[in-house]
Length: 456
Image (cartoon, rainbow, N blue to C red):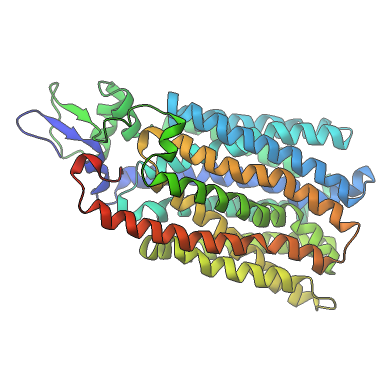
């Protein structure tokens, strides 16, 4: 709050204790749209996989190369655009990410081989991965502390809605236009969104206060956030944080309590991606292998993404209240339902129901990690912290779908699903450890001077 003697405003305290208002809602809505189109792009290859294989006359294992190429791009994008966001702003990082995932998608109709499809998916992946650290960082630095995890997870409802929408497009439009229609739909939506974001997406107030405290943009944004404040030409904006945390250094990811938190977070993201990213990539193929016809498999993909929305909205408030241990519930449901999905002889309605439960619980576990990771890092390194963490997941995603592609030719479906489900058991264990670490840190923080408290 402003100091009447110095006209100083600590934007960290202002944001942390602010009630929800129009500024928060607009920022959340725009981040929701970014991730909605991100979900369109991400899901386009997954839900279109069976049709792509049929169009090019390829076996299932060949699609593993396409998935791995896309995930390699997502890995690079999450790191590269995380750095861009920390250095040049969350808005620029998000804008470039949206552009990066839109333009290659529009080139998909010109692909004449699976190798070209893989190349375009790699380029699209750069943007798909790139927007995530910037959205997480922007919302973590904008939402009041008590709503921080819920805000991030609510934005990822957009991602699940994008998956659900592209599933509907695949079910109804692919039989008419062909496999490429899902990519053109996603790319066109991205270009339209890019135009809107240029004018409406705000920059992170905390990042501006840390890097450009005299910026006119900062004064304008604070005025929008808190119009009741009296801001004069003498008003100074500051972001109070430990003195050594003024610029990014990789060592900061392992400073203090983060020397334990960061490795645990990386393990969680890596293991979780082996389950969720692999399941998501092969989900439509798995449903067809389990016994569903192509159209019903595409619709189930869409319904499962809708189920993920409900699961995420349920888990978000639980994460805010109970911490990382809340994700143990969703991880446990994911493991059991993924395994059961491979049971031979299931009726079509049961395949649909179990598939929805498996995908929704795995998605909620995935988004719970995205929701909590920003809180472990201070503003100046948050984009990099999130980028490196999600990057660990992208590394796993590079190998997971490709490995499962080879298993399809060698093992029955239920044994393949064991490999997909098992890593979420590791996620559950790590979330318990992170929860204990968080509680220990909070207890220690109460005894620390203000300059050493956990940054917002």
